[in-house]
Structure formats: structure tokens, C-alpha cells
Amino acid sequence: MSYKASNKLQDLQYFGEYGGVNPSISDSSTYTFLSAKKMFDTFEGNTEGCYLYSRHSSPANLYLGEALAAMEGTESANVTASGMGAITAVIMQLCNANEHIISSRTIYGGTYAFMKNFLKKFNIDTSFVDITNIDIVEKSITSNTKMIYCESVSNPLLEVADLIALSKLAKKYAIPLVVDNTFSPLTLAPAKLGADVVIHSLTKFINGTSDCVAGAVCGSTEFCLALKDVNNGAGMLLGSTLDSLRASSILKNMRTLHIRMQQHSYNAQYLSERFENDGLRVVYPGLESHSGHEILKKQMQNEFGFGGLLTIDVGSLEKANALMEMMQHQKLGYLAVSLGFYKTLFSAPGTSTSSEIPLEEQKQMGLSDGLIRFSIGLDNDIERTYKMMKSCMQKLGIISKKVMVN
Ligand code: PLP
Image (cartoon, rainbow, N blue to C red; front, side, top):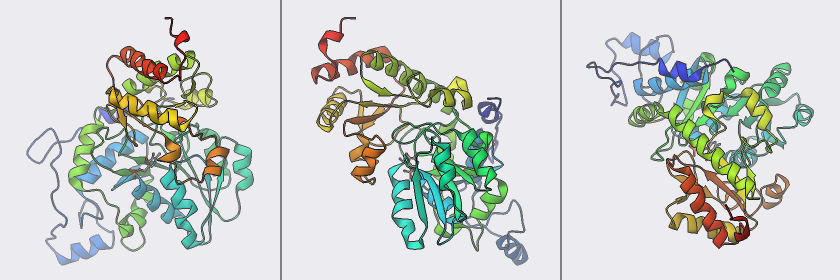
């Protein structure tokens, strides 16, 4: 891929109000105007560079938005108070009552619940499909379809979307392709592959310190301004704006994202290869056995690797729970949802982040009881981590002791 998101990010340089190396934090909810006419014009959206009220925009949010737009190669980006704040605003902006959405069936449980349950209030119907089957996606399109939605690498099954094929299809029918890129920042730049809108939960890798929730919508200037429109913008009117203080702290953390992603990916690749070799059922897009491996290889920015998420099916929920408790006890990480932290986080998605998906549908999509999702941390000595994890698995009979000769 020729687009160098990391270079765009590297070239960003801001000066604070007093010449500081960080931009000053805008500590105000509202902004003064020297003339009443200017205030009116700003409300009408006719003045650039004027701040009105921090739910609309604030300097810190614009700085963070600029960094995210640089990373994704989009014209603009808005930041929101959570990933769900970004997702729901985009959906409400693109879809009216009685319209139709096509979504991947393997997506974050909250997004699934919003589409499946909440959108019933507006009679918006979603077809949940196997997004890796382009024929099925095309067959699901109706004259009412207003959005094709997927995650670039899906939560929790790590399915890889063929973004080039999907965007070609979306363009053929003039339907916006919306991609949640939370699992693969820097690894993938979906807008450069043809996506119209790219969403992030900044809560995860981009912030990387698990100390806040935040989100982002990256897209055209026209779309980002429409979201902020005082009369019709879903971002402005639903009110999921990020606080300025948080925006500045996320911007500071984002500066190490490229180094962190490389280490997350290196460690996840290391563990996947070894555990696969030990005979475990490992899903990781960096493994040749992964059905989306070649597609991701074709679309990714190689230096950032295949990402920090992997899953292991240990056979049953009992074993999964026992293993997670043992690993936490041994300080290998935390039994916690979410991802992108410096320590490894693990959870059983069927009973946590994907519990909104009915059991029958979980089964259909291959989400089994014994599946553990790992967000691999930044461990400096990953070989030691591997040995410790393997020892836990042996104690619980997940890996047989006989295999442990080397
Ligand atoms: N998108 C994905 C892929 C997620 O995993 C999550 C949360 O886990 C979200 C969106 C929602 O983000 P947030 O929790 O920041 O609202």
C-alpha cells in the first residue's frame, strides 16, 4: 500500500499558545464574540475558524480530529465521547426511518444491538450477512439500502473484510461504505481502499491507556460538517461530543501509536505461531491458516503487522474461565473486556462483549463457548509470556504435557 499514514502523522506539528510543544488545552464550554453579527453568522455556519460552543467544536477536538484524518487519509474527522457515540451518529445521519442497512454479522455486540433492537423504533431494518461473501452482500442490496457496514477486522471473530471489493460494490450502487477500523489502526487505512466513512473507538489502541472512552468519525469535509450542523447534524444534536481535556490527552498518547502497534502485532504473531504449533485452535490474521490472511496482506501497511488481537478456542466455557482466572493470578494480564492496553486483556466474548447476540446466531457465526479473545499487550519478553501461558494451559489440560518436550 502506498499511503503512508505514519508519515502524515509524523509531520504534524503544533505550537501551544505560549510556544509550548503541545497545543494549549481549550478550557471553555462557550466562546465570546466581539460582534453580535459574527455570532449569528457562526450559527449559520458561515464563518470559518470561529468557535461557538464546545458541543459543536473546540480547538482540542479539532487538533485530535486533524491527527485522525491524517492517519486515515480523509479530508476531515470529528471526535466523539465514545466509539458508540461515533457509530450511532453516523447511522442516524445516513439512514432515515423505513430504510435498510446491510451489516456484517460479526461486529461488536453494542453495534449489533443498536442495529437489531434500537433501530426498530425507526423501522430501520438491518440484514446481517457474511461480509466475506461479496455475492451475498450484493444480493442483499435493495432500493432502500442506505449503508453497507463492517469492521475491517471484526470483533470478536477477526474476520477480514475485503475492503477493495466491498467499496467497488458500494460505489456500483452509490451506497456509502462505513468501516469500523478499531481493531486495525495504521495496519489498514480503509478510506484509501475506497471506504466513505471510517469509524474508531479511540478507547482501544489509539488512546492505548484504558483510561477513557472516546470515538471518531473520519470522512469527507462535507460529511463531517453535516454531522456538526446545528439544525440537522446527528453529532451536534445527539450530543456525543468529546471533552477537550480528554481530546488533548488522547492526542498525546496517539504519538506513540506506531511503536505500540508494531509491538502488539509482533507479540500477537509470536504467540499465535507457537500456540498453533502446539495444536491449539488459534485465529490470528497473521497466520497463513487464517481465511483472510491473503486479503489483509494485500491491503495492509506491512510495517504495523497483523494487529494485536487473537482468539483461542480452549474447548469449553469452564476451561476458558479457569484459564483466564489463572492467567490473571499469574499477572499475565487482566480478565477484562476492551483492547489495546499495555497489558494483555482477555475475555470470553460469548458471555461478555458479544452477549447481545442471541446464542443461536453466535453458533451460526462460529462464536463458540470456549473462545477466548486476547488483546496482546506490549510485553518486552514475549517468550517468557508464552512459556507462562503454556504452563497454565498444561495445568488445565488444554495443552497436553507430552507436547511440552521442547
Ligand atoms: N467498535 C468496536 C470494534 C468495538 O470493539 C467497540 C467496543 O468494544 C466499539 C466500537 C464501541 O466503542 P466504545 O466502547 O468506545 O463506545
